[in-house]
Length: 353
Image 1 (cartoon, rainbow, N blue to C red):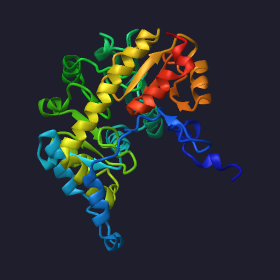
Image 2: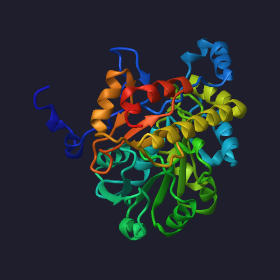
Image 3: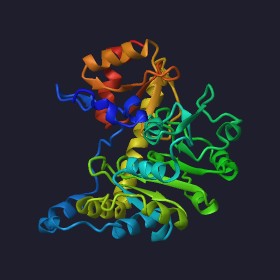
Image 4: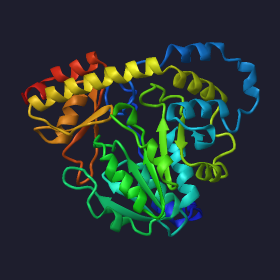
C-alpha cells in the first residue's frame, strides 16, 4: 500500500532481512550451497511420522516440549530445566535477543560470521558492536575491550561461513570477562572435536544453542534448543511464543536425538568426505581453510564469482558472500561422495590442478 513504509518502526523500515541460501526450482542441481546434510535422518524418524496420530493435530502441542527437552538434555548431559526448545536454532537466537537487548543497547558479534546476527540487532533497534576477525579469521586479542558494555555477544563456533573453531580456552576467558550474556551458536558443533557445553556449567551468563538441522539431517522440521543455567532458561521461557514447537516436530526430535548411532555414522561420513575434498582442492591450488563444520570455505585460483558462475552453469551450486573479507572465497557444503566427485571432476576445478 502506498505510504505503508511509514507505518513501520524506523529501524524496521531501514533494515534488510536475512537472505537464506538459494532453493532453486529451475533445474536439477548438485546442491552444495545451504549446508544441508545429504543423508537421510534416522529410520526412527520415519517410524514416528508413520505412526503419528493425525487426529491429535486438532490440539495444541505441549507448550514446553518436555519430552523433546528431556531428549536434548540427555545429549547435553544436563537436566531438563537447563533446556529451552525452539523452532530451529534461529528461533532460539531470536528469543535470546528479544530477552536481553533493547532499543539503543549494544549487541556484539564478529565479522565475518552468521549474517542473521546484524539482522537481529536491527530488529531490536540495537547498536552494532562489530569485532573484525584477524587475517586468519581468529578472534583479536583485544576482543574483551571491543565488546565492553554490550548486553549480548554472539559467537558462532564453528564459525560460519569460515568453518574454523575458535580455541575453547579463548572462548572460556571471554565468557569470564564479559559482563553481558554470551550466546555460543553451535549449529555446526556436530562436525567438530569439542563443544562449549561445559562453559554453560562454569559460567552463569552463557547460552549454547544447538540444532537438528545439520548432523541429524532434519533441516526441514525446524527444531533447535538452548542449553543454559536454569535462571536464564526460566527468563527465556517468558519470552518465547506459547507453542513455538509443533507436535510432529517434537515427536521427530525425540526420535532423532535418541538414535545417536545413526547420527554419529552420518557425522563420520561427512567429516571423512570433508577431509578428502579439502585435500583434493588444496592440491589443485585452492586455499582451503581448516573446517570443523560440514562445509569448506575455499579461495579458488580464479575470481570467486567467476568460479561460482561456472559451477552453476555445470549444475553445481555453492555459496558466495560478497563482503570485503569474504568476496574472494566460496563456501562449499559437503555432500555425498558421489556429489563431491561431480564437483571435483568439473573442468573449472580440474583446470586449477
